Image (cartoon, rainbow, N blue to C red; front, side, top):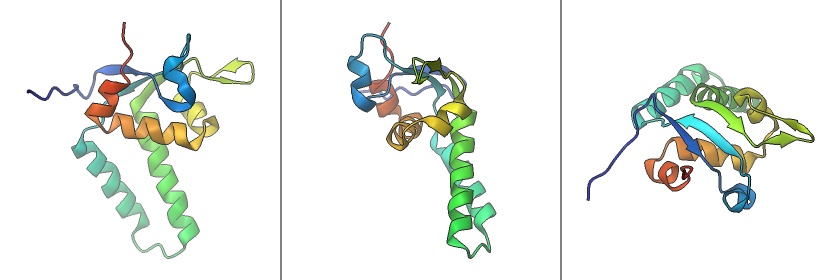
Length: 124
């Protein structure tokens, strides 16, 4: 069986599994780009360079969060169906700042994995 990948510039509509979202009548949909291993390595090198010589664990955690947010915001184009109280959030940075940790991590793992991304791809 062949392995089929995504173009790194193609936008994919991903429906997170979080909180039974995929079974929802009107699910949250995250439009994102696939992040191949070479790009994941880029973020890892960025993290290593920024943490070089840093001894303070709190500062290391801050740098890690910065790089993770950078990866998220660079590769999430938009969000639909995500609300904070009565306001719909469509911006990746605001989503990152307000969403549950498990939801953000699920989306990051999906953007880095063809099989997860395909499994959550919105069916038309």
